[in-house]
Image (cartoon, rainbow, N blue to C red; front, side, top):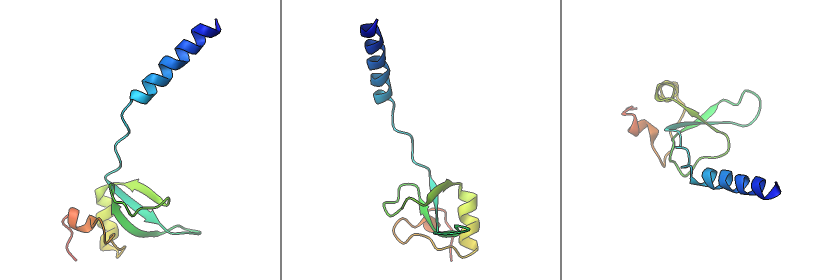
Length: 86
């Protein structure tokens, strides 16, 4: 019985390893530290300069936050990617 269970667990683990990694989000909002955690910077989903305080978002929110003055990352330039001019 244990052999059957071990074989089933191995098949399940092999199937999990074959699953492709999930796609990164297209847009990220980096939030600050502390109470309120306000947006402090905007990123594209593939930016290398993101941290643990980023949450996925949609392009409409990124546009709105850019219009409100939240700065775009200087490395990935989400403002340029969205065609938002300053």
